Length: 99
Image (cartoon, rainbow, N blue to C red; front, side, top):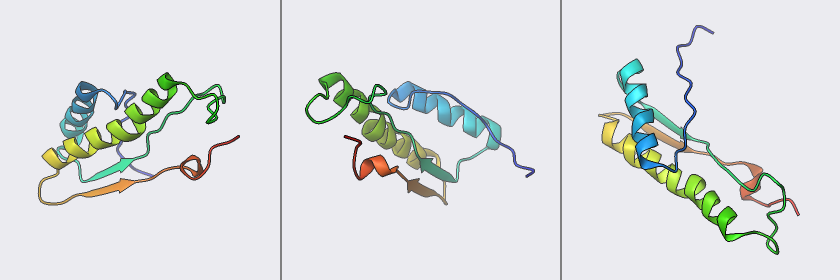
């Protein structure tokens, strides 16, 4: 494929990082037409059952999965111009967690 792309590693739970993402994208492409929210986090140890999940894991999960997605949408709405699409997707983890 002959596609032009931009790779960024960032923490979308951080408002300033989200602004930096959009600044970089607009600098490279001039505009953003489509937002695809696909970021997620969980307890990587695999111990996040309902009986053992900690407050930190809950807070981190909501920070990325909820706040991060909302911050990305808010910034997109500020910059999308007269056209735009927002796509929010998830994984099977949204249906049922292991354990």
